[in-house]
Image 1 (cartoon, rainbow, N blue to C red):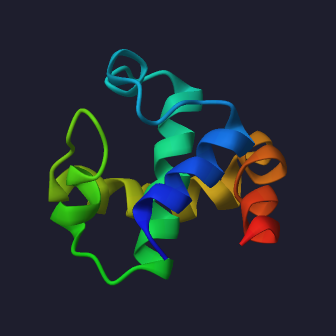
Image 2 (tube, rainbow, N blue to C red; image 1 turned 45 degrees about the vertical axis):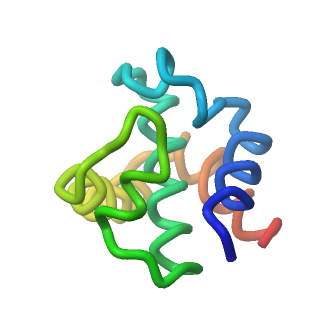
Length: 95
């Protein structure tokens, strides 16, 4: 699966445009959740390296940001009820 397809799915489901440089560079909670979902789906459904996954967004993220986000995803999913309810589960049904 290509990153463009995953980006479109996450953007359509969350309502957050992952291509928008101004919104994607900010640390608003909804944007961070959308990036977490994107990074996790890219890691599961593509064979890209962490740095390639980070470079697929604009502005580009480095491999450390992607790795940190992947590690935080599990904790956020386990403990944040809003993220669990509105976030990842709705995306797995699409794919």
